[in-house]
Structure formats: structure tokens, C-alpha cells
Amino acid sequence: MGTSENFFEKVYKVAKQIPYGRVTSYGAIAKYLGAARSARMVGWAMNASHNNDEIPAHRVVNRKGLLTGKLHFDGTNLMQQLLESEGITVNDNQIQNFETVFWDPFKELGIQ
Image (tube, rainbow, N blue to C red):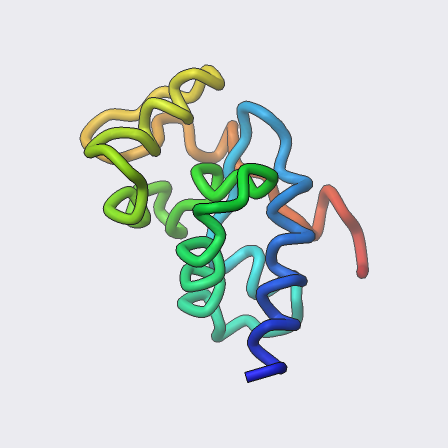
């Protein structure tokens, strides 16, 4: 159990650095942490973080820009509302201009 806790902490450290008005994907965080096949674990970490206001879980979406985590937020459209309040356009659970607002941890944070 200790290993997944450490992994979750690493995920949170990256997620906290996603800037306002930008998004990244579960897979991009997993890849950055050297665990490319662990996108699902990143999702679990985001789901487990909902009581922590310091972690912007709403800024983490799937690799196609879909709000796949929205069911884990209180209220039907809270994830979308949070993103839209940051200027991100969402139609049918899909982030528009995904490439433009995508934040790549490798490019932004460099080698860890």
C-alpha cells in the first residue's frame, strides 16, 4: 500500500503545477512520472483527491480531452463549470481547442 501512496503524492505534486486555464491528461502525468502504463492509477489519485482543494483535479482529463472524471465531482457539471470558469470551452464533455490548452509536464517541468 505504501507504494501507491507515494505514487499518489507524486501525481499530486505534478497536478498542483497545472496552470489556471490549462489541462493535462492522466497519461501525460503517468508518462512524466516514468509509469506510462499507469494512467488509470493517476485517475484513481485524482478521484482520491476530491477533499483536497489544493489539487486541481478538474484540470486532468483523458488523452482526447474528454471529461471522463466528471462523475466523481459533486454535482452533474461541476468539473465542466470549473473549467469554464477558467476560460476553457467544453462541448458535450469534450474540451475544445484541446491542443491549445494542453499542458505537457515534460515540456513545462523538464526532467524530474
